[in-house]
Length: 335
Image (cartoon, rainbow, N blue to C red; front, side, top):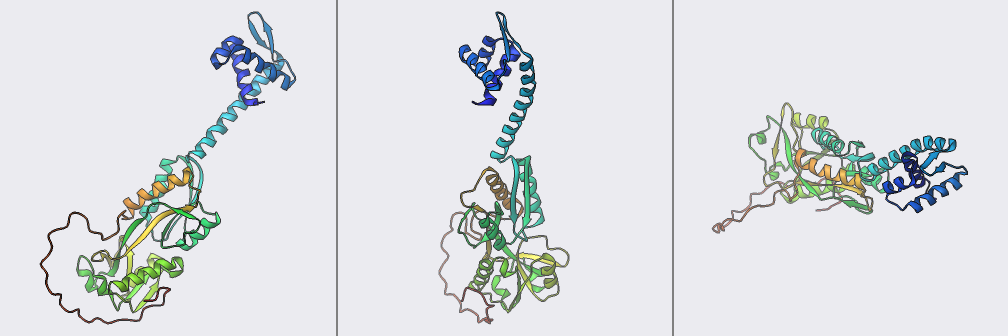
């Protein structure tokens, strides 16, 4: 027997004090409603109503059951509503992570945006490297994350990829800071600052490989996990840093790279087949926030847009000027 349904029928009859009127209200046949009330009485082992020619009245046992019915059905309604909110992604806790260096404005916008879209939800957000996120997503201790590619993809699903162009952070008295942009090849022979390799090994190596492909071989690579250490190395004149745009702070300037040759690919990730409503809400919010607050874009950074102009007249290219080649820092991708 569906106890809750039978109690709702019982409450309707008790409030109307008439089986016929209650049947009309419930939109069921009167004989069927009478049978359901009799079945509830048999189940509880008591008589709930005294029947008269004018209707029904509650027995003492019926009055007791009605008081308990109000409380029980109210609790059931609250439970149903709460479960529906969790099912729809509007409630419950979501364990998610963002990579270091995403930027305070982007992280704050992500938290605010998720809260606005899910007033009853709770975002448990941590800062984790891509390597750590992939491990926790695979283990099931993390439900969603923002990762940088390339990374291990086994057992994971991903949202649309966004591209975040890299620029160079320089001391403001650095000669290269005088221009509006910097050619990547002009950084050859300089010491570079990058994020620690163990936080995203494939991306670290891919970045250095792309540098070499565009004519830049650094003399050394420094690993810096935090903005303060990165800025200290840059301000000391010991190195320049390849980073996405962020307010550079006193004594430093950020310049884009000519032609936008370097970009980090970023997307939301979650365990394969577990894209529930809360995960989808997080992915949608994160995608919007990364575009609006982290300078990311959907198209490949540096790709040409618009119609092409007429072909330029052919001219013999001058011979390339010789440039020094520096030993490549060790990586998993040999040149």
